[in-house]
Length: 398
Image (cartoon, rainbow, N blue to C red):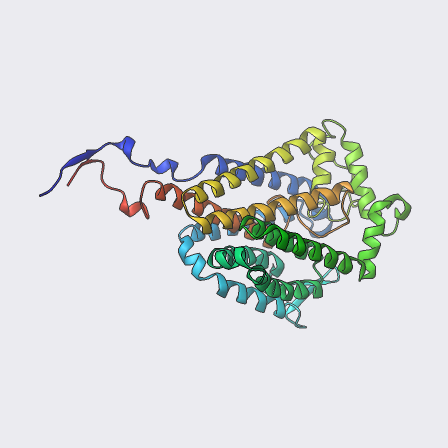
């Protein structure tokens, strides 16, 4: 016997609510802000190097379009499919880390071999590795959840793989990416429920090892000593930091005005990349800097909310994945701002979504697309649906 009943539109998940509108709005606000500041910070250098004031802006727009296209494709990949591909993705990333060190394949820029060139396109492999590590660790920590909580070996196993990745990154060298990956993995381990005593021991070991790595290289030692008193080395190792601090000093409350930075006129190296935050503060002042901080706080807050909702819906993999992305962005944002303000030693880390850089922008877009996919699947799961094809037709249902 058939039971007839009616479904009203209020009982169905409205399609416009199948994603976090506030999250998407914040992302686009950051991206537009970033494009505007890249255009402003690079205009003089672009004119000098290429004879066109918007060369870097055009390239950044192209990278953003590529990132959005790739993100649209990622949105069609379910979390279950992504979880099954996690190990293969990480193996591929490790292979690329080996290849970037092969003479003739890896491209050296500013003394570091971090890029693989494909025609006119240069891919920074460490950015891709960050993404793959988070995807893999979320999968591993879900699969080995009981072992992680029961014994020390549960969380020591991935540390071996992390050590291999760390050695390859340090060989480039890319200490900044290594720091971001390590801190992100530690955050994910803590959330996975590892015993406090094991986590504390691991944290102590990591701190000691990172300190030893930091003092093992003369140029890292120089960076450590320089940031403590950059004015002593104003025209040597401290030049970049002192020029950044001058930019902050000029900004005052409301800045010199958009496009009126003096430091971007060949005084501050990497003004449109690693030190974009200094130019933002110089042109838009403390008010502009606080707006940027607020945008990132809102972004991370929405990501944490998406992760929490996924956890509440018993979708642990998606939750841990988004928590991992959140840790990654928080660490990179703090390090970039800390370097620009002289609170942390100089590291080659971009301001996420804002600084000029194709690889970082595309990978960041992919991470946000996966976050949006997690939110989409969580919202469907809350209605007992797998995908939109499971939506019944509004009206009489047999």
